[in-house]
Image (cartoon, rainbow over the protein chains, first blue to last red):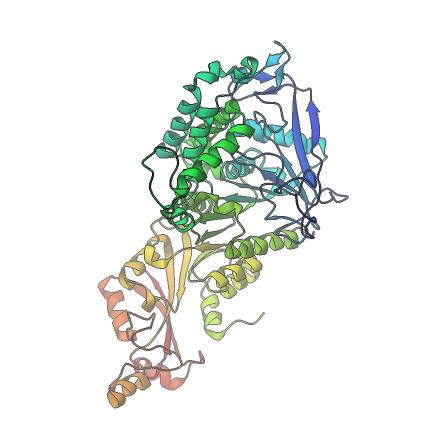
Amino acid sequence: MPQNIPADSVGVITPQVATFDEPLKLRSGKTLQSYQLTYESYGTLNIDKSNAILICHALSGDHHAAGFHSLEDKKPGWWDACIGPGKVIDTNKFFVLCLNNLGGCGGSTGPTTINPDTQKPFGSDFPMVRVRDWVESQARLADRLGIDKFAAVIGGSLGGMQAMRWAIQYPDRLHFCAVIASAPKLSAQNIAFNEVARNAIIKDPNFHDGHFIEKGVIPKTGLMQARMLAHLTYLSDDGLGEKFGRTMQNDEVNYSYSPEFQIESYLHYQGEKFSNSFDANTYLLMTKALDYFDPAQYTDHDLTKCLSVAKCKFFVVSFTTDWRFSPERSEEIVDALIAANKDVCYARIESEKGHDAFLIPIPRYIKLFGAYMDRVRLELNL
Amino acid sequence: MSLRSDLNIIQNWVAPLSQVLDLGCGQGELLSFLKENKDCKTYGLEINEDSIVSCVEKGINVIEHDLNDGLKHFNDASFDTVIMTQALQAVDRPDVLLDDMLRVGKEAIITFPNFGYWRTRFFLMYNGRMPMSKTLPYNWFDTPNIHMCTFHDFEKLCRTKNLTILERTVVDNHHQESLAIRLWPNLLGEIAIYRVTR
């Protein structure tokens, strides 16, 4: 529990729910007849509704980006380091919106929701969603709130892909686009990591073809394996070395296969925590959305052509030890933006924190991001 | 807004509405001027962290990039003018970078300190040590200026590469021209500003 809510926190937040009855036709060809989106907002929407910022979450994120749900919460939202009064994304100036994506397990319609046709949880029957479907549903939420144009759409990792997709799909609906620790598409290696994770889940005897909720079980072992592997790819060798080294739990080896090194128990802890809180079908669906993302496939695999429709200004950031979404991948985006004559600022932040660095308040990152957000305010007179 | 005098000479050589790339754009003074006064579309490459923040504050398109990694990610002829002030002597291969500048740009504007300046020659002759001055304030072991050259050297390189020198202005370290400098540039000039094309 936070002893006191810190002064730079958005405080205790209650998530809200918006229900949509207008069917949503998905890229896969399937249609969601109705759905609900769970979201949070921080700060105040100004009279002309020009100060809204959309935060897009990554694979395991949700709508709870900042603040606390209750005074009993041990931890604030996933991007509390950057969102709050006086912080980089300053809630004194901006109205910040973050929603749980469709197919998620944080409250929006997804595999754990009851399927109205069967009166059972959707499970693996929940249709696969693509990044463009998320953007479409996010745009509908913006319509609902009366937001015609976002001051900025911001995301890291898979969230960065959504931000990029916004610039392509709704070029007139955002002024600025921040793409952090992201990529224009996944590499074969990235897809391979996702497949190993998915395979661990699907092969878990408790998976039951994705209908495990009805059976009252969860594919815990598979989900743990998936998370342990993925978590490892979000960190760097140097970062792990610095944090754990070869430190052991006990002074002597005990010739057993139970965790002995601290890194082992840390990974088990991460897997355990995640498998108790995250839905396996959501994990499968999110990783597929990642794999499928490749906006340039519709423009002859020419990313410059793909991004040429954008009208916003871009802020691109990468981190030196991020090998899941390496700086080179961000630089592909930057090069294409320059070739397309778009306004762009790019920095490669030195950090040993791997892919996870985008969530961490690294001083140089915060300073630069803050300077960019000040510029956003200045240019939009906010 | 008043520009440093060497930057003022450079901006005079950039046509309005040009596409401009600045290699080592510093705090973005020149690009800011070109953007505001000549409606140029500008991009700057920079590696200094604080300079990058300054550029972001000014609303300049700044890309973190080490010039020693070359310009291979830029398309051919994608810029009207590629500018590099006081960095030629500090990169790994000035000759290769010069080629690259004129691949991505139609013209290049380059400034560098003249190692043939009389005080530099005198310093070496009189002291028998690597020259240091206001323009060259470093020790030999910590200097970023690893490829010092004279104006004659640079012009010879241009001739070897069949480059055309469109304009050249030679100035002292206050970036001022004088009759004497015009008469004996390689002896009396401290900094040269060249405009070259292929």
